[in-house]
Amino acid sequence: MLEIEFIEPRLPARGALILLVGEGEKPSGVWQAAEEATAGAIGRALAAAEFKGSKNQICTILAPGAGLTRVAVVGLGSREGDAAKATMLAAEEAGGTAIGALLREEAVALAAPSLSPAELAAAAFGAVLRSYRFDRYRTREKEEEKPRLARLSVLTDKPQAAEAAYAPLRAEAEGVYLTRDLVSEPANVLTPAELAQRAEQALSTLGVTVDVMGPERLRELGFGALLGVAQGSANEPRVVVMRWSGAGPTTQPVAFLGKGVTFDSGGISIKPASGMEDMKWDMAGAGTVIGLMATLARRKARVNAVGLVGLVENMPSGTAQRPGDVVKSYSGQTIEVINTDAEGRLVLADLLWYCQEQFNPQWMVDLATLTGAIIISLGHEQAGLFSNNDELAERLIAAGKKTGERVWRMPLGEEYNQQLKSDIADMKNVGGRPAGAVTAAQFLQRFTNDKPWAHLDIAGVAWNTKDSAVVPKGASGFGVRLLDQLVAGYYEERPEQG
Ligand code: BES
Ligand code: MN
Ligand code: ZN
Image (cartoon, rainbow, N blue to C red; front, top):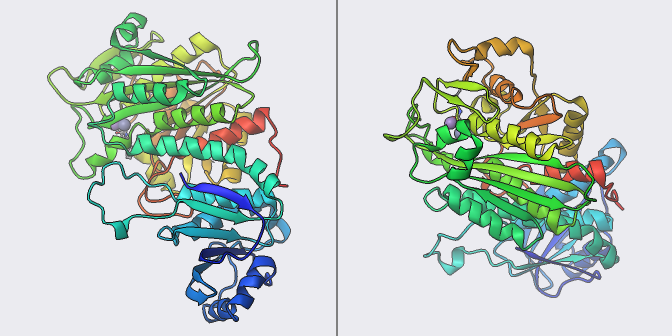
């Protein structure tokens, strides 16, 4: 992970310099010093590029003089009026955008004369998020292709304040990195057993209690819906229960549940070959819950949180579940499996019921790459949010605006229930083409018992097909920042921008 240091402002003698500037901002501080040391080269370049400082606008100047290899000037947008509310996010994105252009540099300093220490910490956070790279399996990469950047020096006259603001963000970045690492792994490596082991490895040293259940225990318990999905695979299923106790023992926990299909071939209702490789990241919901638990533990969040992930591989084989099979879920409700490719909801059904029985949480949030239909509805910009509780939904929407991991509320409703009617069982697992993401959520709701609950369909946001400001192409880690903020907003009142 990119190392961050906060130091007193001075023009670096070598390396690259990032300048984050607002709309209409005039040179001051290190910006002014750089301008003078380069005999006006920066100002000339900005004028030639018609640089205005609008959000994420970037102007990169090569070898402007004074020993600098590059100067990257990135816009923060308007710093006035209502827009000021979004300055933390603007700083984060500008930091990410700048670093995206400088990964081959060795030493980089960042100056932003108009930003507060907390905003500078956000800029550093953005830089860390953007500089993620999954390179475990690159064995023949040439030196000149590898990123070199190891440390970012953030220039501030209040290094201690910036450092303090950065500490919880660094914990979040660690969680996001863990999630991205897990989601990026190929399915031949990351089987359910392996994923369970990685969760245990990553979390037990942080003070999270981790319990792993295998197929015998799950059979004893009667997790028939989850086991039906798993039965076609040579790789055994696991359910991992993670507990972080940061509040008193009498405080009711909150719960996070994740779909962890380590590979979704569709099963007997097999998917087309084209793009099937994407289904290695059908465990992103589980990956996010694991990264979130790591974050909560690392920053010692004052909350009791349980994380539950259902880990299975959905494969076609002689032992696989067939379309038309009826399974009995842990709740006792029976399900006719019309389409074996609608497997995520089967996994979550058992987890949701077990979660309430075991932990009686205040509320539950599940994350799942559940439907292609949510991508048709919302594209790759926002996750789908479904909830039986307005307060929880509104808090999630607010946390989304704050972190940039946005969610859009979709409907639930009795009307949709008839699409799930089965002729021979309590329900079927698919509701046909209309409102596919809604009927999937409606299916999950049958296992929530009216407990406050929100479902995030992250199929459109778990994987980036191109670089964005703070997420490089690949696994996004979507949800870690969102849910960490949800917890902070509910229980902790983290200091706002300073
Ligand atoms: N994992 C998929 C959903 C998905 C699709 C995630 C694309 C990410 C990208 C899920 O298990 C699935 O196959 N859903 C089906 C449901 C259908 C059979 C009712 C779908 O969306 O097509
Ligand atoms: Mn599927
Ligand atoms: Zn799936």
